[in-house]
Length: 271
Image (cartoon, rainbow, N blue to C red):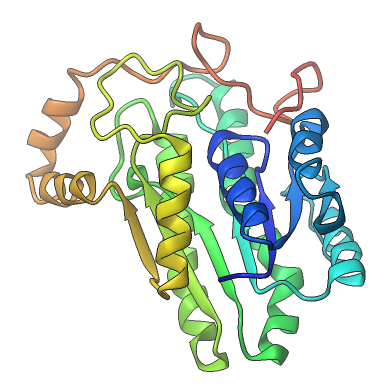
């Protein structure tokens, strides 16, 4: 099991569950997110083994400062989970949605790189450690009305593949986690069926079990991964015809949409 972990997006459903289970196992955990109140509730579970950090995950300097502070108190982690992420509908015809695409790429893709970067060299020197990126089954193929999210997660999957190849010889494990639907704030406003919906606590337990076994690619739930793979074999026009009949994910500002931290200064910063 892991003894020293970094978890970004620790305010959200999956991040909270991962942090809670790691703390329960006796690990020291850096709690990274934007909602200090939620992070405080986690830190109260093990004050001596946790610290709270509230940087923007896409800010490399802020993430380096977080890494330096954590390492000075608890040493080099053996597990880094880049879980922070945002979701929302996207309309390529609307100029204002370009800002949504940009910010989603900053958090979902760049945020993973800035989370990992401060720890890569120390982990290489140690010759061990696990880097985990929380991607999505939505990164396997573009979905109508969800181009920004799909693009960010597809980019993340390929980035993790490249990083895995770069670091394999140094003894580091790089794992891609591709969940389907989880019962979190990111899916609460969805207006379509969500087959295989998982509770965050169940998903977290399965993820940590898979990481302990050294798995490099974790899909949750597996049956939804098989369905996704089967759909990917369909001709593109047939695939589109099926999906275009489904309700779209709400865009920013629409009923049921989740907020995107940093999209504009008037939005609440919750991640």
